[in-house]
Structures are given as structure tokens and as C-alpha cells.
Length: 464
Length: 52
Image 1 (cartoon, each protein chain N blue to C red):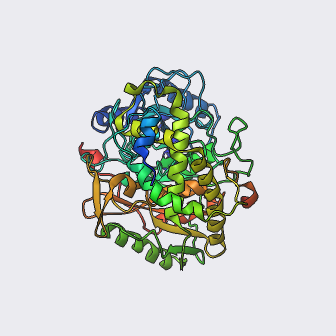
Image 2 (image 1 turned 180 degrees about the vertical axis):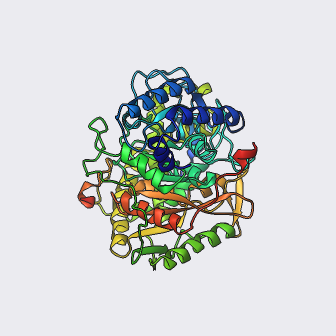
Image 3 (image 1 turned 120 degrees about the vertical axis):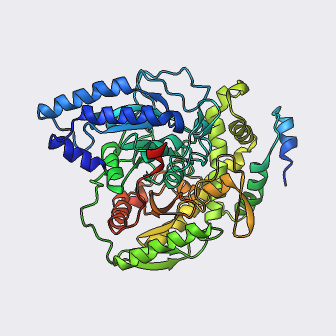
């Protein structure tokens, strides 16, 4: 069931919020020991919130489409009275006194919170193999990674534990698990969703966004969480709009950019063929597919890595004397970030401005860009390298290669599932649009979804 | 190429691998050479001007 279907069923009294909560609790109880998607489950609290949601609906108070809908948030969003670990030993006993802005807004929209989702330690990695709270498993095949850093969010949505989850994306951390777990993930424009109360990884690259089963479900969550927040210094006053695509929305005559360079280099052949199929589908739906050359994305990736290394180490600096509290991969990155000279950080930010200007020119040629989200499907949990296009590549670098640059630009990007590979694992495409045009990329995603682009629900969750 | 291991040692940081820094050194350093002096850092990303 989608959020919209559940919302309709709630209003028609075919189901109650309490029943939706009971079903979610049952599913979490059954699956979490296998998938390890949650660090903290607040099932009892959720039951109470659901009862309240039912009472409000019965009294005629309707908070909108998320009213009574089971959701969960990555464990870096502060939750009042509920432990918030950021997947780290540093915060293992941290119980915040406030809710993050996103949590406040989801609560105001009537969503029922089921707890805190597992993640890569400090959101600093793409495997979600958390050394302190255990690895998250991919519901499509538990021998494979769910991606990260929002791996618990991807797994929980794919396994239908919750209808939607919140993630964060600093170098692809929403879109990667969305692609690997076969769900929809949206990284909104930088400044669109408040970062207030989200523990930071890298201030100028962190984006908060929803993961859901369908594009319209993701849009419903964005409607609830988007908007200016004075408590986030980079929050934008650019007006939020209704992001939910109309039924029967069209992409006729839209100019969809097909990147001739970078994005189709060194792909798994199954991924490439599936993504090329999306362009054919878009064309059959009336879109104009236009080949374009994109600016230097490899340079954007290098810039993003320098900024992330420096900012993440600055955030973690006060805790680094407790070296035993960090997993080896994260500690190595944090140490290396401390070695970068200030000149490198400043020059990375200068290159960011230069490359942003170059990328902006693309929007006079096309309305959006479509590209694979990742060059591979979910790797095996311990896999370190992957062979692509005749060369061995570090799995972590391969996983972030097609997504990281968009964080540097702050542009909105939507990952949707577009097929299953021969190994049975999901493949994702990302739709990248101009700043503030989430409504456009959601419309394109919904039209493709309506036009048959997608995958069946995750079957493994049924047999776990 | 900078000797990152020596830099780490001099900074009092024990480090086994400097792989990301070495890879970045090769990718990032040449980009900086092309930067014109009037390109200022985008330390706080604000997209209003372009988006509105």
C-alpha cells in the first residue's frame, strides 16, 4: 500500500491508524533482527500516537496525507526524549531535549514515528556496516549492502516496515541506498529542507530528504518538511510549493538531457542497459531526449571530497581524542581531513563556485538530466573492489562516483528504481534538475512511474 | 606529490593509509592551477540569486 492508498483507506474508515501501527510494529518485530534497519524502535510511543491520530480524525481534525502514517527517521535527527546516536559511540547515550525541524514538521503533519534508523557511523560512508550497532542488510538479498549512509532508511522502506523514512545526503547518502534497496529517494535543493537538529557531517554539503515507496509518496513527505526555518542559517526563503504530481501528469515535449560524457563511463552492463531503457520509455511518453555534454563531474567529485574531508573533521575534532570510539574507516577519514591545508579547502570552495556557474548553463539546453544513480547494483557486504569497464575500482568510490558532484552544486536529484539486474538486485536512475525545481523532477519521476518504469515490491522481505 | 605520511607524523597523527589524500592530490591539484583570482569561495552556498 502507498501513503496515498493508506490515507484514503483511513478516511474511508476501512482501516485505522492503530491498525496501520500494529501492522508496522509486527513487521518491524519480524524483520528487524534480520535487517538491523532500526537502532531504536519506539513501538509503544507509536501505538499511542496512532491512537491520538485516530481520535483526531474522528473529531474532524485532519492533518493531511501523512496523518496516521507510519514513518521513521535516520538516527541523526534529534528526537526529544529518544536516544539519537548518529550511529556512533560518541553519541551512544545522547538523549536530546528537542526534536529536529524535520521531526517537528512530520509530527505536525500527523505522521506516526516508529523510531531511529541505523546508518553508516556518523553518516561518513556508504556501506551502513556499522561497527557499533551492527550492519544493515539489504532486504533484496541480505548478503548484499543496502548502501549508505541512510542504509536503515532504505532497508526499512524496501521491507515495508514503514511507509516513508527520512535520510540525509552529503555525497549520495539518500540516493545510493534508494538505488540499492529499490525505493524512491529525494535529495532536495540545498536550503529547501531545514538542517536544524540534524547532526552534521559536512555543513555545506548536507541535505535532508525523504525515502518512500513511490514518487508521489516522497512528494507528500516533501510537502510536509519543506520550507524556511530561521534556525538553519542556510535555510532558503524561496517559496515552497505543492510538490505532489497530478494524476496523469505528462512529460510531453520536456527536454531530457542524456549525458554524453562521464555518467555512462564504466557502468555494469546490466545497469547501462536498464538506464538506456528509461530514455526509450521517456521518448515514448513524448519527451525529447537531447544528448548533452556535462561540465567536469570528476572535478566536482574531487571538490566534494576535499570539502567533506575538511568539514567532517572540523565537526568531529572535539571527539577525536577518544579514538577508541570510532570505527577504523571513519577514523582514517577524520584523521586525513585534519591534514588538509586551509588553502585546499578555500580553493575547493572557489572551484565549487566556478563549476556551479558552468553547470547552470546546462539548464538553457535541457529541463533535466537523467543518469544512473550508481554504476553497480548493491555489492556484497565485504566486497572491496569491483571490475567495471576493464578496470578495478574501489567499491566506495564507484558507489559515490555518479552522485557526489550534485551535492557540491546543491541541486535537487531524485532516484527512482528502474529495473532489476540479472542478480535480482534493483537498479536506480537519478533525475537531476535546476535549483528549486523539485516539483519538475518529481513530475518527471511520477510520469515515468505511471509509464511503467519501476520494479515489483521487494519479495525477499516476505520470505525472511 | 606531498608526503602525506610525513605530514601526518609531523602533526602527531598515526595513520596507516593516506589513500584518499593521495588520490585527491592527483585529481584536485591540477584544477587549482586554472582558478582565476577573482573566483571567490562559495563557503556558504546560497542559491536564491540563481533560483528566484
